[in-house]
Amino acid sequence: MATTANVLFSTLADPTRRAIFERLSRDGEQTVRALTDRAGVSQPAVSKHLGVLRHAGLVRRRREGRQTHYSARPQALAPLIDWMGHYAAFWRDHFDRLETLLNRMGP
Amino acid sequence: MTQHTAATRSLVIERELPHPPEKVWRALTQTPLIEQWLMKNDFQPVVGHRFTFRAPPMPHWNGVTDCQVLVVEPHRRLSYSWNASGEAAAGGLKTVVTWTLRPTRSGVLVRMEQSGFRPEEEQNYQGASYGWQRFISGLERVVAGLN
Image (tube, rainbow over all chains, first blue to last red; front, side, top):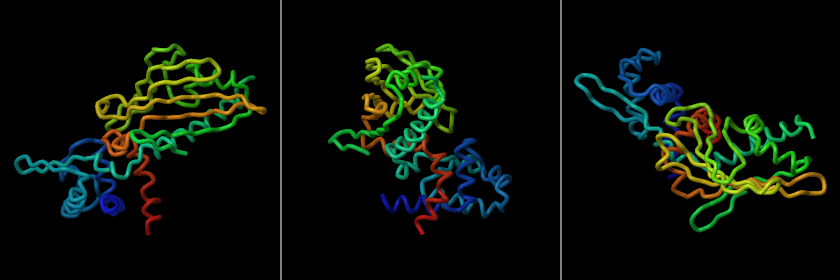
């Protein structure tokens, strides 16, 4: 578990890799070429980043003819997500908002 | 504060607020007021009523939480189920949110308990989807803390 988390952290610590992963999560499956056009780095560099993401389980690839398509696997982030921690922050934020509302409301 | 039991776990948040319980009850049960501090909703304080909370959609989550009113004891206790909706609903989060109001000398003690977290839910797909944007935005800070 700790090892998995470390791999995920180190993989996503790189801003280019994070941008690629974010883009795949947001926009769905993409070819290497489409990703290269937007990444601002060379195609070999993008391919290398995709290899690292794939090693961490964050993306999967699908070959179709000469094209390789990549898609995100956001579920690979699961080891880093703690539901209770998430909701603890969520409810604290919303308790603050409830207090603000109560202060604004009439008696 | 968390409580541990064999099968499920609960999240409890308590806060004492300098307001009468009746006023807090309104904020917890009137649709336009709920929207102001929590989310868009079609809540009604009627046991059995099914309703949704709606947040902006994000990747792999439509932003909808499916709920059903379980308990309505005016000015004292309110409870509803709180379940992930959409494509991930099948394996998604299924919890119960219970609000308890206890009058105090200077106002009311508001207690929110969200119960039913199963250990495996911390690793399910829906969890990753819901939390991942927040995670990404906080990643640099977290990574900085690791070094």
